[in-house]
Length: 423
Image (cartoon, rainbow, N blue to C red):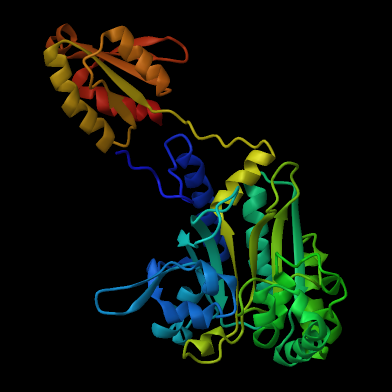
């Protein structure tokens, strides 16, 4: 009986995984420039962390989490997102006491959600995200958005659309919440069961419903923009001012709500406008979550962050026809003729690698012609040919695969010669 890969997961093979590595390397490089430091949290956490942090009215908590009981009877969950765990660590490790504030962190790793697999959506997926904790300045919101936009742009994406909204402070959200309840309550029976359950708990989530998004009441629902108090309006206007200053184009969408309960003030999504990208156009989403640290038992700490799917990032590159240069080839291939020469190349290969040279040799006892073909497939810049006769004379032949030029080198000086050749 054959064993196949679990539904909603994927194998990322050589030739493809290098694209992931390029994106991850660019993300780390940008984070270093922006002064965000990496944090690595457990792949599983206490279930209560996500129920409290993400929100028990969300689809993630209600339907999508991989939850299990360990041998000690504790309820644990594979992380469905990154922010809750980062904030838990921030509180538990008392990062609010660090001298450098705000605390600026990034993470990269697999997340897990039990949902229907489709193009750009997997049950195990990889997220890159950043979190900035400790500042209420809308300038840090603009910085977080600019980091995400710059990552996409530096990898070559052009067909991007930034959508922003304000969910307001607590006072604004309470006023808007009451208006939503009054708007939907008379006809809530026409909506799905999830929406009926959300009416009292979190009516804002009704606006994010995929099943009833075409209902006429959705089009006439009260807009949060109309319920922003003066402070929330000023905050949102300042954010727009900063984005304009950073030359980042954006669209204000009063209907944009994020799928997690902890958002307030700034909410944003970056979408792909590339033709043929697919039905799910969102590449990245984020927003401000003042109050989440207090929910985790910590002091009052404002926060802002985003998360992006690497899978959708790669899909967007494909939709725009952007090919990442991944096959850089190797520096040298050692071709051996004769048993003594083959034995010698084992040690020579090690010396070259320790000297910083990327290299390979034959392990299948192939003829010299087949070894040259193998060198071509590996895109080797040079092929070093060593036979038993050359070994006896302490010589090795080196061929430049681009020019065809060949030189004979003293074997004892070969590693040093090749290092100098690379320089």
